[in-house]
Structure formats: C-alpha cells, structure tokens
Length: 111
Image (cartoon, rainbow, N blue to C red; front, side, top):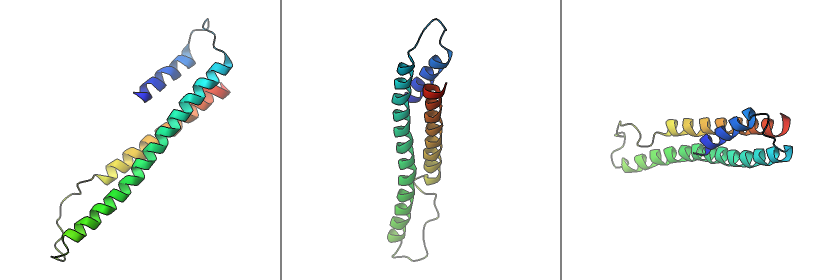
C-alpha cells in the first residue's frame, strides 16, 4: 500500500499540469515525509533479512540437539524456514526503498 501511494504521489509531482502551482517548500516537505517513511521501510527490510540469518542458525542448532541421541543421522529434509528466500526478499526490498528515498531527495530538492 505504501509503495503504491508513494509511486502515485511521485508521478503526480513529476507530471502535474503546469497550471497547478506547488510551493517549493511544500515539495520539500512532501519529499522529507516520503524519505523518512521509505528509510524506515528500508531499515525494517534489512532487519528482517538479518533476523532470518539468526533463525536459520537457530533451526540448525535445534536440529542438531534433536538428533543428538543418534549421531550422524540428521534428517535430510529441506529447512522449514526458507532462509535464503527471506534474506533475498529483505535485502531486495531494502535496496528498492533506498533507491526510492534517493529519488524523493532528487525530486524534492534538486529538480
């Protein structure tokens, strides 16, 4: 929802009709609000990616403890937590949000 609203607002700021005037200060305030929200989303995405690493390590440790009574017989099943997929999703979203924040900075303060 947030990304959709941000993209729509960004499109409006960039392509609004010439007869609709916007104060430069208003454009800067809008940009600051979206930069802050986008950076918070990027930080959350990075935190999820890092947390997933710990979850995967914890899962491996728990599996080792559960199979300790039968050494060398660790089950050959896929992990219950798709750690790589979650890390990829978290870091990809983080990168996309950082790019969106840079775009808002450009639109709000350079253009």
